Length: 266
Image (cartoon, rainbow, N blue to C red; front, top):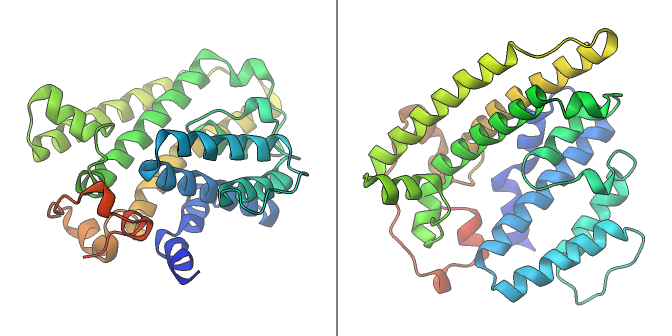
C-alpha cells in the first residue's frame, strides 16, 4: 500500500490534470484526474506485462467501461475497478463510442458544457490541429521518457531511439533531431491555427476555447514532466534548469519492478 501511495505521490498525475485543465470546476476536474490515473496505471503495467496479461488487463478495462454498474470480481486486476469507478463519474459527459486512444479522450474534457456540432469537430482544420497537438505531446513525452525507457530496455517505440537507429545518430544527435521536428510542428500548428473557419456565435467562442486547450495541453505535459518524478526522479529540478542529464545504466527487464519503473531515483 505504501509503495502504491508513493507511486501516485511522486508521479503527480493530479498535477498534470491541473496544468492541462486550469479552468475546470470541481466535478470536471475530478474526472480529469481519474482519467490521468487510468492512462498512466495502464501505461506502466502494460510495459512489463506479457501479451496475454496485457490482453486480460485491456479486457477488464473495456468491460468495466461498458458495464460500470457491474461489480468487479475480487481476484480481477485492479485496473478494472479503477476504470469502473472512473466511468461512473464520467459517463454523464462521455459517450463510449467517442473514446479513442491517444489525446482525444483528454481533449473531450474541454467539450464538457459545449454544444460543438460534429461537423465543426470533424472539420479538416480542427482535426489537423488535433493531430499536430498529439505529435507535439508524443515528441515531448519521448524526449522526457527516453532515459528511463532505455534503462529498462523499453525504448524500441521511442522516437529518440528510432531516430538513432534509422538516422544513425547518437543520443544527443537524436535529441537535437527531435527538438527540430518539434519546432517545425509548432510552426505548422500556428499556421493551421490562423486558418480556423468562423461559424459564428457561441460556436466560435467554444472552438477557440477547445483549440486553446490543445495548446495548453502541450505546455502542461512539459511542465508536469519536470515537476513530477516520473521521468527524472529526484533530479527533475536540476534537469529542468540545466537541460542536461546522464544516461542511466541499462537494467534487465526481469529485474525491474513496478516501483523502479514508475519512479526512477538517483
